Structure formats: C-alpha cells, structure tokens
Amino acid sequence: MPDLLILIKKRYSVRRFKPDPVPPEIIAGLLEAARWAPSAGNLQPWFFYVVTRQKEKEMLAAAALNQRFVAQAPVCIVVCAEPDRSARVYGDRGRHLYCYQDTAAAVQNILLAATGYGLGTCWVGAFKEEEVRRSLAMPAGRVPVALIPAGYPADDPVHRPGRREVSEISSYL
Picture (cartoon, rainbow, N blue to C red):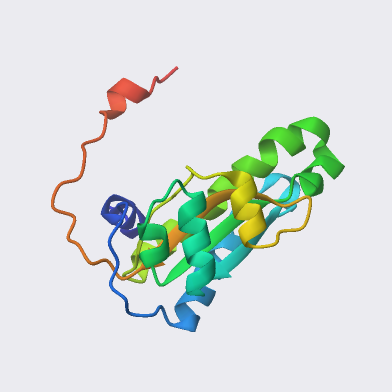
C-alpha cells in the first residue's frame, strides 16, 4: 500500500487537543501543503488565517455553533475562498464552484499534512459565516469556507466509523 494511502487511512477528526503549542515550522509546513493544492487555471483562489490568540479562537468557537474544541486547539486555520479571483477567468462557474472546489483541495492537503506531522485536525464547516468574518475582520471578497482546529490529539482513535465498499460507490464503464 502506498505511504500516502496509509496516511489517508490514519487521518481522523480530532475534537480533543493537548495544550502543547504547534511549532511555527509545522504551521509553515501546513500552509506549504495548502498552497500546492490543485486549482482551476492555477488561480489559487484562497487565503489562510492562522489563529493562535485565545480571544479570536473563542470567537470562532462561538461562531461555530459553540463547538468548544475549536477554541481548545492550539491553532485554528481558517480557510477562505476568493471567488472574484476565479470569476475573472471562469465567470459565474469560477465564482460559485471552482473557488470552493479549490479551497476544499487545500483543506484536504492541510488535513493530510497535519496527520503526517502527528497532529490532529477536524474539518469544521458548521459555522455562521458573518460571525467568522467579523471575528477576523475579513475584507470584502473573502469567504470563510472551513475552520481547521489543529494540535496534538488528547484522545486515541478507538473506534472509527467504517467506509462504504468501493463496489457501492463506483462504477466501471
């Protein structure tokens, strides 16, 4: 089995974190992984907020429907789309689809890189967009897509839900 597939299978959603800080060089590695995600026309329509201040993490947790683990994590990366960047080349399809596909690819790269560094993460999409925007004083044109709390896991992945069989989710034509 390729090393990447092993890493993919190892990743799980972490909601309990140790208080240990994440070293800056690891955070830089996560952002490096994100920026190498594929994007339509290589437009890279994304922006990343690296949030370590407790005040801002508390505001993000409140915006995320009071999911407290967002504030508990030592760092939270807020992944944003820049729809105008994609729209300049691809019009409405870029604005309403490609920029979100592209940022989702960047999120997945962050999750996998974090697993490789021994960190735990959780892809949080349940949040009030305007509250996140206000919490980080985002400029117009930047849309928060995902919150990624990250840190060293304080739990063990005892039970992970199974996956549907490949034969259930694919068709060869």
